[in-house]
Length: 92
Image (cartoon, rainbow, N blue to C red; front, side, top):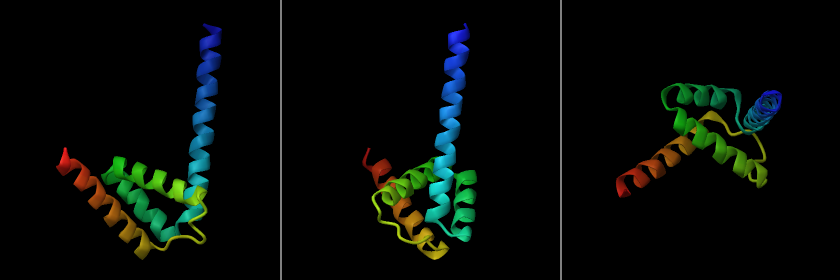
């Protein structure tokens, strides 16, 4: 029982660290306005918000983001990703 609670605690800590890393990267990738827009998207469409976050982390790690993305560019990104999701859904 003790090993399980230890393992659970480690997993919780690891998850917490991953979330913190994700928040830091998103903070670097987006301007304040764009981060606010992302939080609104998360309320209305958590799956899309998760997809956008993963995409941002990926392009950041590849060195493709050199400065924070402003809100107008972030809106374009959202539209592009939304269209891709809709295409995948209609193809199935």
